[in-house]
Image (cartoon, rainbow, N blue to C red; front, side, top):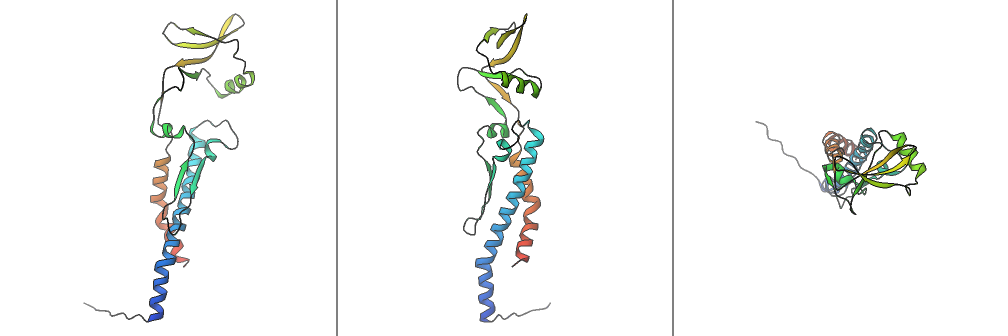
Length: 185
């Protein structure tokens, strides 16, 4: 067995104290913020792969933000203010604010763009279908054009995986990033 004795002079002790109290917290905060920004980019990629985004700029993907960590607050946050994101994250039932939810009847995105340009539902009316559903329709030629189905609630599947993506990114990136920051000291 080998016993090693280490003696540190006052200047080295002050230098170690300075590193421990000032530089290490800075390195941790910088690492947390860098990893949060990586996670932000991965969440935005997930949004673009999973959701049909109609807006070319702004919108849901740009609502993913990062709150940076500081030496005093050793926490970085990846968050969104999009009010619908929580229900997309956990899934569940969406309840109407009024009497019914209006679920669009379109089959593909081009129909939505066409319908938004028309926008005239003043001539629309409600009908009760044989299966008990209520629909908002309008006359089109000799037939009816279905605009919306009116429902008391809608099942929203879990599609948004922000928590899982951020957690995995932290596991994968934090240690490597912290080592890089400490090497810069």
